[in-house]
Length: 395
Image (cartoon, rainbow, N blue to C red; front, top):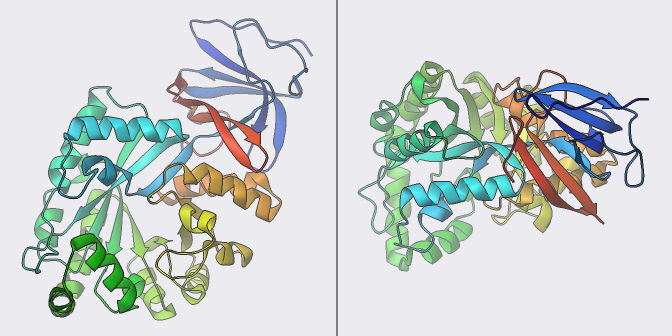
């Protein structure tokens, strides 16, 4: 089969690759034009030592060429903004570093998770408002072309807070908010139903005494009883106003999942039990788990293991959560676990893209965005060798 010629001004060809399509892997070339996948020429090449790449093309040397990774929930930006307790880093530098880190691990679309809802009255455990100002800074850098990958917003609506409704009101449809998640960290339920786990986390992070911790528990439970229902309803209405999808967080029981379904939830972040995950599937809600949970072999909070849900066919989406590099590694692990690499990679590409309402990315297909990553397998691991966003090499 003759190889096509390349016009450097209008086309990019990634040649001699093992191309990961939705349900299979083929060898061949991908032609990129105007930021989109214009052509897939399969049956060309064959890996290292195969047919020569066309003049002007970039030779993938038999490496895997996959869709770029789509991240729906990451705390990574917070780590750049506050690299140490009570150390605030300049925001522009932090956002740019966060963006570059994600590009370096193959994430081409990110929903930056920003908390809305503040607490001022809690003893030594309060937190203030930041989301509106930070969202404007992210969008400003994006509009200036300072960021490598595609950034959208994920508002984490903390219902057990004092200011949620006011903070939600500062956002609108123009802010490109893709996700609103319903967060409820009231002590004694969901992620922190085990108070001893919460004690370890809060006292370690905030340096509380036992008395301060007891006061914190009492004040949070009283606040939740007073405002949580109204705040949940406000968050659902805000999501509809923004045009965002709704996610639940830390569902634990079948009853909680049924409530999530009634609110229009499309995917569940980190259900804490097999019961909840199974109920999600019964209600048509996709299940997202943390890649670090899978890699570490369990939850750091003592909740259900991602591997257990994967083995029961109850896992649909992975999130890097607090370790960006975990996303690719965990997807490869799932591919090996299931004996189906395309299926494993769909949990970090197609599935999250569709869950967030993005139809233009998440798979290698003609007409889709040319968000691509080049991966060299090293045993069970993967070494990233290239990242393209809308056809432009960014890493």
